Image (cartoon, rainbow, N blue to C red; front, side, top):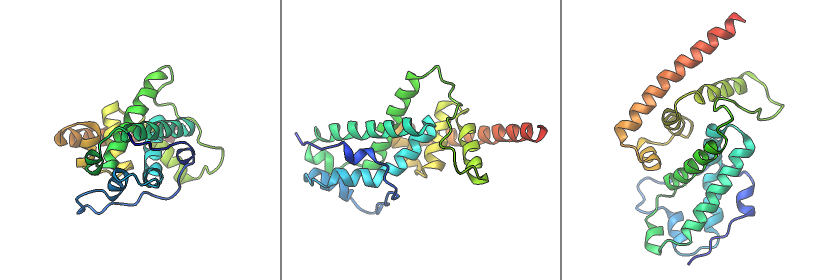
Length: 204
């Protein structure tokens, strides 16, 4: 059994964006490093995916601390699972959709644990930076929180996280046609919600 350490390497938000893989590569080079027991590979996994997973968790949970905790939990679960996988399985892994799937499951579990909190309720991120762009982002996140869960997940993965439909299907287990339908319907509902809220705002 491999021992993939976690802890301090997961705690801090990594500010660098995740680098994109060459889609033509047969294997993910990082998966190969994990399979070969490279001691630096777990840290590279965190560095490559933390930022995008944090954004995704925040779009679901809409609380900074909750998103940080969810991503740390996801990495801990990931490293625990990786330590049990065979070298052959590790080499063949597509790490990005796998990490999204774990994060999605963690976020869903946390939402179930706090059902008394309205899903559309958004905690203030911080007391600074209330410019128009920030308000626009928070308005969009607030409207996103009012979508049904499957539509919210689909729109978030496609447009906030920029995942292709193949990876969305890998993360969620949905057929591609279902994923596209959920994205389309989610966007339509999102536009209606934001239009209604804009109209209410103009009347005040």
